[in-house]
Length: 410
Image (cartoon, rainbow, N blue to C red; front, side):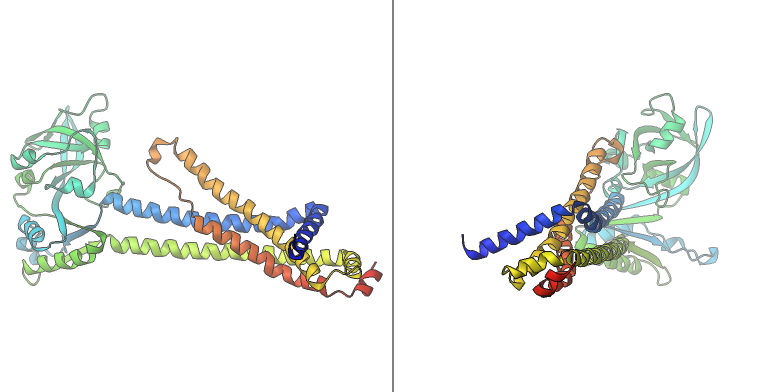
């Protein structure tokens, strides 16, 4: 065993002995580091979980969607039927924009439906083919429309879970008859939104969806209130948004105005907000670690004062300047390093426990609380660095003590 190994073994052993002799003081000093380290891990975890949740909510509405609608001019004199978005526009978007996978349109209106002599207010929504694939509706009972239903103008409908519960509380809704004005529809499916939009889209808790060709029987017109185009990939969304606006503008009179937008802006804003909050919270955790570092420095200064005579004896028997310096630095790093490990363990165990509990909650679905191993490394490095930086002043003071004066210290 060479002299360097002996030196470090002796230094670490002396540091451990000193910490064991003051367990309570070392533990209390360590507490701030534990809290700060756990905060860093948990803060990044919360940030990632929030970001993942927001992304899943947006993707739950529909992936890579571009939305369009006509801007209402506000006065009846300025309203022109030819300005409305039509099936011809839908076909043009699909044919002229290569990045568009599919397009769909909807038209909705408030109606009343009669079931068993009871009238229920509903939102009647006519949809074209591809709407379900784009909006990713979840059919919980029965089926959705097939191509034959769309082509043959079958008088079938799918209803929301809320409507099924209110209109058919004690019986199976599939195959039941709904009377809307003078038309009769057969319920072939019950659905729910993958992500609740709380009525902010054409789908409401009281929606009845029918094939779009049938909506003309009520409106007498053949146009869409809402229009969807699905881009092939997320990177194509900006191009598709721009091209859809161009196609709509080119196919209608110059005075017609359309609002074309996508969810990418919302997603970017959500990511920026999540990142800003994460940075702020990490800074708060850093402040907590700085405060704990100041605590380490104060305790180590007190320790140096209390152990002045011990330092004098070590120097008198030949301990070099570096041995004293590294011993006290080792004590500071051991306190911060051990605190970091305990804090990281707490920061990792909490999301693991949350995931374990979520696995027993069916309503949570596929929700997973992420663990950032990068934050684990960051917390450990920052915590140890805190002990090293704030422990240097007391260690340097101890190493600079004069042995003669130290031996006379009472």
